[in-house]
Length: 441
Ligand code: GLY
Ligand code: MN
Ligand code: MN
Image (cartoon, rainbow, N blue to C red; front, side):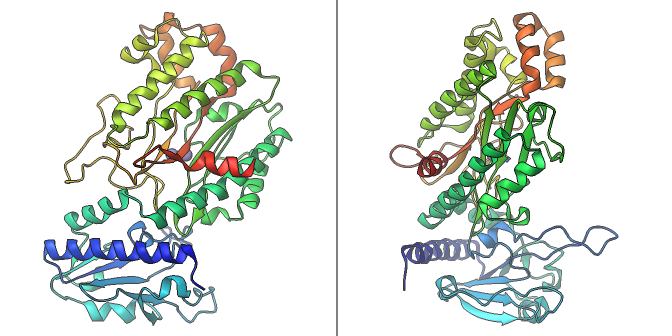
C-alpha cells in the first residue's frame, strides 16, 4: 500500500532529478555518477572507522550505510542505481532493495565496484562525484567533482523538499525521546557513559548510526564546546548536564542540545531559563530575508542581556556586544544549515556561488546567508564559563566590568547551550525540536 511518506519520497526524487538534469544540460554533461563511498582502513591497520555514505548520495538515495553503490543520472531516463550486494560471509550484505525507494530507480545488483567501473571508464562528458581515490579507475576523461556541478547540487540541498522536512522532523522525534531519558539518568546521578547508554537505548540507535559524536558533559565538562570523552565514573556531585546529541532518520540528522540542573542550584537554573527564553525568541526570528550573520549578532545581544540582567557584568548589553565582551562567553556561531550532513552545505556561499565569508570577528560562524523558505537551521546560543577565556577576560580592558565572585561561583557548572532545529517557512518558523518534545510531554 502506498503511504504518504512514499508519495513524499516520489516527489523528492522527481524534484532532485529535474534539478540534476537541468544542471547537466547547462554545464554540458551527458551523465552524472554519484558514488556512496568506500570504507577506508586506518593507517597501518586493517580496521576502518564506522562507514557512512557521502551526503550527495544520501540526499538522493535513503541508504546512509550503503558501501560502493553508484547512482547514474542521464537526461530523460529513470536514474540507475548500481546496488552493491557482495556475496560475503565476513560481513552482512545489504538487504534487498525496498519497493518504496527502489521503484524510482533501475536497480542493477553488483558484487563490487569492479562491476560498474569498466562501463564508465574514460567516457566523455561524464561527471562523477565522490572520493577521487575511489573513482580513480574511471580514468582521466571523467570530470571528478567539478566545482560548478557540486555547487548546484549543494544549492538544491539548502531548500529541503517535503520528504526531507519529514525526515528531519522524525530525526528530531527520535532524539527528543533520548534527551528525556538522558535527563532522567542525570537526575539519578549516572556517569556520562551511563547517560550515553541510556540515550542510545531510548533513541534505538547505536553510536555508529548517530549523525555525530554526541556530547555528554557533566559539570565543568560543559565548558568544552566539543567535549569528546564520556567518563565512566560519576562525579562526586552532579551539578549540571549539557547534552548535545541527535539521531538519524534515513540519513538525515537532528542536532539538539539541552542543559539541565537540579532544583537546589537556583542561580544556575535561573541562567538556564533566561537563556532558554532568549533562544526561543531567536528561533522566532528565523524568517525569509533575515540574514544569519545579523541573527548571530542578535544572539550576542541576547547573551549580553542575560549577563547584564543576571548581574554578571556591569556593562550595558549594546556595549558588551560592541566591545567584544560577549564573545568571551559565547565563542561559537549561532547555528548552521542541517540536513544529510550535520553541518550542511553552502552556508558560506550565495546561491550564485559567490563566497559569503563569515564576519571577521566571528570566523567560526558556518552560515552567513539570507534565509529562505525551505532552509533548516540550528539555533544554538550558548553561555559558557571557559577557564582559558575567563583568564584572558580578567586581564583584558573589560576585566573590571565583570563581577568575578559571581562568575567564579558559576565556573563549576561549565556552561549552557540550547539548540533547536528550525524550518524557515513562508509563514511562522517551524520549530521541529520543540514540536518533538511537546509530542512526548
Ligand atoms: N553538534 C555540533 C553542533 O552543534 O554543531
Ligand atoms: Mn549540536
Ligand atoms: Mn549544531
